Each structure stands twice: as C-alpha cells, then as structure tokens.
Amino acid sequence: MTRENRNSRLQQEIEANLKRAYDDVLQQDIPDRFTQLLAQLQSADSKPQDEGDQHDA
Image 1 (tube, rainbow, N blue to C red):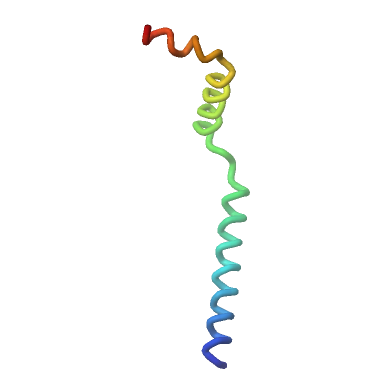
Image 2 (cartoon, helix red, strand yellow; image 1 turned 90 degrees about the horizontal axis):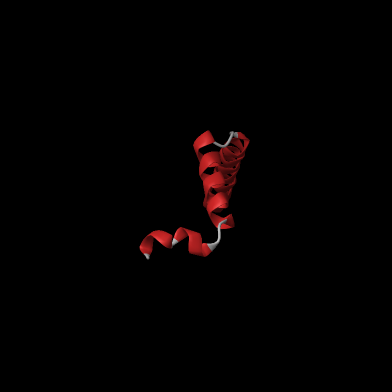
C-alpha cells in the first residue's frame, strides 16, 4: 500500500468517524435550559426597544 493510499484511507476513516459523532449529537435532545433561554430571547425580541431602556433614563 502506498503512502498516498494510506493517507486517503485514513482521511476517509476520520471523516466517517466525525460524521458518526455529528449524527449522534444531532439525535440528542436540546437541554431544557437552552429551550428556556431561547424563549427568553424571543420574548425580549418581541418587546418594543423603548421598554427595555426605561431604567437608564
């Protein structure tokens, strides 16, 4: 086996392992804390800008 073939085979194996790891992460549930934070951010985005700056006046 040539060095180029070994490198190519190694690269393919690394890519396959990375894909498996990525796919595994995609299958995991989103933690509740992240869901709560996203809800808070969406709520803050829906408020008018002036309401959030009232305490600075």
